[in-house]
Image 1 (cartoon, rainbow, N blue to C red):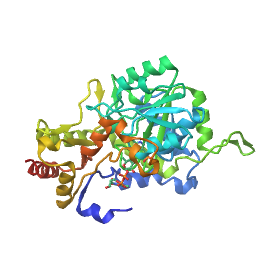
Image 2 (image 1 turned 180 degrees about the vertical axis):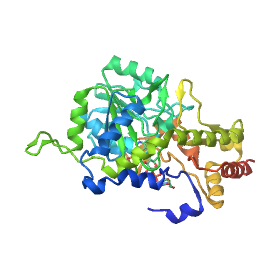
Image 3 (image 1 turned 135 degrees about the horizontal axis):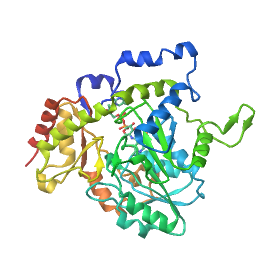
Image 4 (image 1 turned 90 degrees about the vertical axis):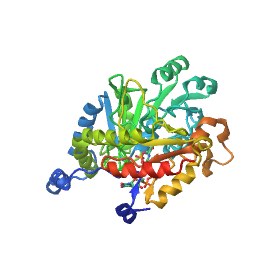
Length: 377
Ligand code: T4K
């Protein structure tokens, strides 16, 4: 549902970054000459090249959205139907849905209470003879313990597919986060640090994987008379790729501006009893994608929901990313028990993601913090 009207008057959880209109018009001008609007045109090819370099990955392919990059990546791995994929329920619907829509079974592992990514110490207890893969999430841009995950994957010969939807442009120990695992998938949705309106990418090492992914995103068509495999349609069009080319020129500045917003929040909320801020991770170059706060009502004095309502009254649209956890979704009723991941359940019931975007005015950050602090009892 559109909230355009609200958007003009309220502060929402995020606001898309868009390159200057003139720049976009210039970028799409030649589409009117060529009439080439989709099917891996020039813009698609350029964006693919530029992102491969920017993200420091070996290979990258573009998709219509982050979800299709995840869903088709799992399919490209050709995992046996009914195989179990160890993942976390503290994420957006997409992660779990990608597993289920592939005929695979999500097995939910709990999360680390500090950075909300998969708790590596608990992965092995979920491994059975049916386990085929691990699908961790760099939630809020917090990087998973990739070394620990890879050690387990190597020991049990499991594939690792990272949901890196939130982790655009981040580095771990100087290496692009997209290099982790067998495949890492980014989202370029309008709400992300870098957007192509809608879009996504899968990053991988194995060129064979590239061919399979390409087939899956383009009907398995090799040439007009050869359809080699049964594929879907998940191609990024030229208008989205053009938006990506423009936004990529500004993304470093966007991240710098987000850093200012995050620092302003921290200067006012850090150390407040009962408010847990997102972990600052060592060896990680962050992108400041989200600003989550965990509210412990027994210390702070009011609940997450009361703060959410108070912000609403001030015209501030915070969000409860990610409540409910995916194992508690209506569509999975009776299939999973959310209580089995107590940390994820607790965090989802206490988390508030405060507005975060590059152009958020620092005075607005102050107003948001004042509203939160007024609720302290
Ligand atoms: N994995 C993870 C961990 C993810 O978080 C996501 C997506 C995916 C996979 C899948 O990637 P994609 O297939 O989406 O590429 C939003 C986004 O739609 C979704 O991309 C994102 N995660 C999720 C966390 O957030 P909603 O339903 O909360 O979006 P919505 O429409 O309520 O928008 C939130 C706010 O963003 C609005 O209040 C205002 C602002 N906004 C929104 C739109 C659509 C804009 O400023 N411009 C816009 O065009 O899901």
